[in-house]
Image (cartoon, rainbow, N blue to C red; front, side, top):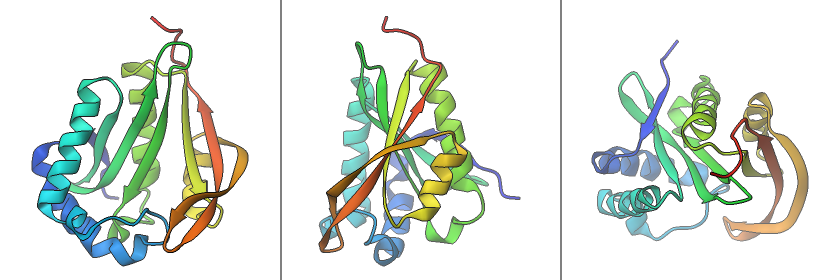
Length: 177
C-alpha cells in the first residue's frame, strides 16, 4: 500500500501541481470550474499558491497538498474559515486521476480533519459534491459527513449549471476564543 500524508502547500509545489492539473484537465472538466489556460502552468500555480498562502497567513485557510511516497499527488484545503460564533471552514480536495481508487483521498480527508480539530479548533466543516459525484460522496460519508440539502443549479462547470449536495461534519473544536 502506498503511504499518504498531507502538508502545508509550498511555492515549490507549483510545477508538480501544474503537471497534475494539466494532465487531468479533461477528466476533471465535469467537476471543476473552467479556468484560463494560464492556471494550468507552473506560473499560474505559483500565483494560486501565493494567494492560498496569503489566506493561510490571515487565518482564512489551511491549504495543503496530498503526498504519496514523497510525491505530490493532489490538494486538500480548508478554506473560507469563519471564526467568532461559527468556527467553521469549507473542505475541498482532489487527487490525481492516476492515484484515485487507492485510498489516498480518504486518508487525506481523515488527516485534514485532525488539523481542523486540533490545530484550527474548528467546530464544523462543510463540503459540496455534485449529485453525480458518487466517489466523493462515499469519501465524505466514510469521514463522518452527513448530507443536509441540495442546491439546484448551484455550480457552473463544463458548460452547465450543476446541482450540488451540501455536506456537514461536526468537529470537537471548542468555542470561540
